[in-house]
Length: 242
Ligand SMILES: [Zn+2]
Image 1 (tube, rainbow, N blue to C red):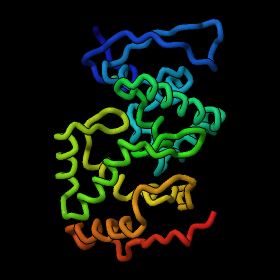
Image 2: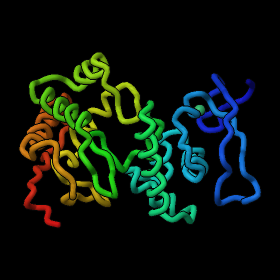
Image 3: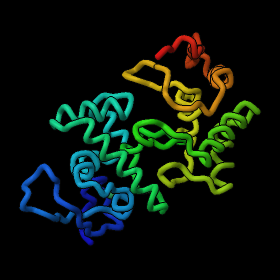
Image 4: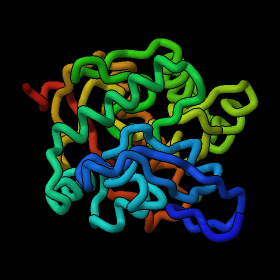
């Protein structure tokens, strides 16, 4: 097929993809056809609102973050909802519904990266609260343990891929994903909120001491001294009261 993917602009492996029309557009139009590459079809959300308002507008999570000058997907999504006059709660509800549907399918996860921001690897959102997902939680513990045993992030990544583990979206592990896990305070029971940190309602997977040791170790392993932070934040649970 001639042309380019309507989302990521590649010109290979194109297919005709029929989707429901945007529910906010003309209600008399039921279905629309778009040309997408195979990769974009595979990771497309089935929810039409998410598909048109988020997925088709950005070729990657990075683009989304850059567009809104945001550090987190949560913040970018909030700005997107304001800009597009969308109800943020409704969008998040749909994104979580999408995740649950994918979990039920038990096939390769279709949820795209933007739609999974709400549930970090190791957890699933159930009724608005992060619930431990045992098989993923074991991998999170393994990652922290291996790192403190002295393994490098690239090495841990290789091991996980070799042993057949996959990320939430069903893809192979990348070093950045592992680095993100090692530095995400969600794993010791905290959650990030509007640039700050607060105590979460979820069960921790990692002791806070372990988490702090990993943060120190990550700083220590940075080769260029000018890239090290002068002070590694030392988290204490008692600093975060509900
Ligand atoms: Zn594409």
